[in-house]
Length: 315
Ligand code: 13P
Ligand code: SF4
View 1 (tube, rainbow, N blue to C red):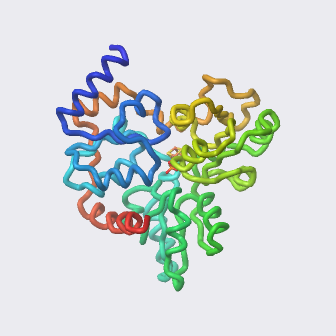
View 2: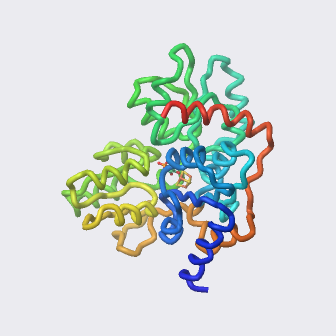
C-alpha cells in the first residue's frame, strides 16, 4: 500500500474514532504531517490535558504516551510501537530512586518528564526542557533539591538558577554522542551559522551554543532569528519542521560520535532509535486496532498525576 493510501486511511480512522493525533518533533516527516499537533514534551502534555477527543494517538516515546494516559485515565491512549522507550527512562529504576530518597527526608524531587510513571509517582513535581528553569526556581527554598534522571539538563538548570541540586546520573544516548570537535568543525565550515543546542547535551557542547532550549523553542528561535544558517544539536527529526516553518533557511545536523564525514542532505545522523520505531504503517494499525494501548495501575496514575498537574499549573 502506498503512503498516500495509508494517509487516507489514517484520516478516515481519525474521524471514525474521534481521535486526536499528537506527534513529537522527532517523529518521521510523514507522521508529523498526519498529526493534529506537533511539538515538544511540554506542548504535547498541554494538548493531552486539554483534548476533547475520545482516543489519543500518541506518536512519540512511551513515557510521553503514559503522561497523556495519566492525565486522561478514562480515555484510550495508543502508541504506534509500545517498545519505543528512552535511555533516560531506563537510567532511573524506581526502586533505586526510592532508596536514595530514603537517605534524606528533606529531598524535594524534581523529575524530568523523560521517566517512567513509577518514577513520576515518587516525585514532587515534573518538568520538561521547556520549563525546567522555572520549575526549579519555584521549588521550596527550605528543601534539598534532587533532580532526576538527566544529569546534563540538571547541571544546565543549576547554572541558570544558581540552586544546588543532587543530580541523578542518567543521560540521553543521542545527545551525549554530540562531540565538541564535530561542532567546531561545522562552525568552521559555516562561520555565520547559529548553534542551537538541546540542554540534554554535554557541558562542552552547551558552551558552543547561541541558544540552549527545548525543541519547540528551537523552531521558534530559527524562525525569528535573522540568521540564514543553523547548526542543530538535537535529534534530526526536528529539521523537517524547521524547513517547513523557516523557508529559505539552511539547517545542518551534527554527525554522531566517530563519524568523520560531514552530514549530507539525506544522511541519517543523530536519530533516536526509539522515536524512529514509529512508522506511518504502525500509526494506521494502532488507530485501526486500538492497540497497543497504554495501561497503568490506577494507583500509579493517581499518584503520578499530582506532580504533572503541579507542573502544568506553573507553566
Ligand atoms: P523536548 O521536550 O525539548 O522536545 O525534548 C524531548 C526529548 O526527548 C529530548 O530528547
Ligand atoms: Fe530519550 Fe534521548 Fe530519545 Fe529523547 S532523544 S526520547 S531523551 S533517548
